[in-house]
Picture 1: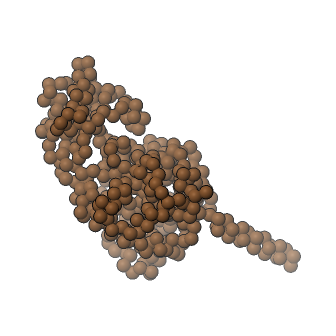
Picture 2 (picture 1 turned 120 degrees about the horizontal axis):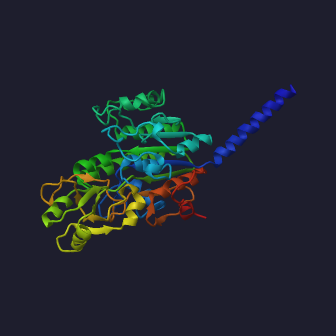
Picture 3 (picture 1 turned 60 degrees about the horizontal axis):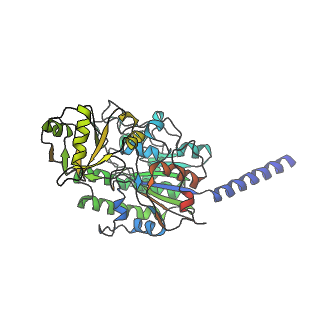
Length: 423
């Protein structure tokens, strides 16, 4: 009898301790809007955007004046940096597609070389959730709808491949509450429906959600196009009911992976050198171009002479130190250059030196390109309202870790927690 009472008391004490721990544990909802250039938020008034829910978060939270990305400024490496605090070579996701495998993303967690926030949260005993977050197939995440499409011939919004690797039984649970959930295509609406259900019924401490349609629309119709504007306004409509379901003590962050720019014109540096009668090696990559060789640096001097000239498409020279600090694989090249706004370099050796672009939206540009930045917005308990200076994408994961009381191993950036938390 005494033993039974003792065990009961110990169990009650453990449950009480667990409840107290849970009550003191922050929750974090990370909403990534793929392709949300920071200008969408910074310039929302001049753009005439009807985004009341994002505006509320901006008015009451902290908005960064842009986020400088990593190389390359594309979806999969950037999303992984935001939950590891490391660069692509360090966390293992160095591109969107696996090298030499078109359409084959880094779907599986086995490709990761570093611990993520969801790894650390799981080790601490916190509940985790993810909807459409890259590199989460096979992840030890409690409630998971991963980004997955193994067969490149399958349409990119197909739902069936995602369900194949989702948490068993979760899709059926969601569909009982929202009958329109299980459809052939997976849209932002369904992603938000899944998020709403998980937030309301599972209440994870860490939730990673990615919305995809703004990125797709800008690729098709151009950065900041009329259609892209309507897409972002639609995403804001979706977020309203989602934000109404967040549990008490939840911090909400809105992030993005890269900026966007419309390809209005293209520049072919190889052709420009041919026309100038200069022989030199040319490298085009990451939205910049580099030169080496030639007679006494003649190619570099030629492009430097174009900077600032009327009608020139050469915007600036990017320092060797900056380039190699972000992309060591460019070692051995003498000088690096970037084009003016709306002009992107091509590797072609034929065609006009300057020609028309395709009018579509592009990213993958150099991270410090003028006004080409990702976004960061933080809202929640004890968060001051105001603005943060431009920050680095490497600072995001340490900030998230501090919100959750986790410790990232050797992050490259610094936490913004002390800058955004009200004393």
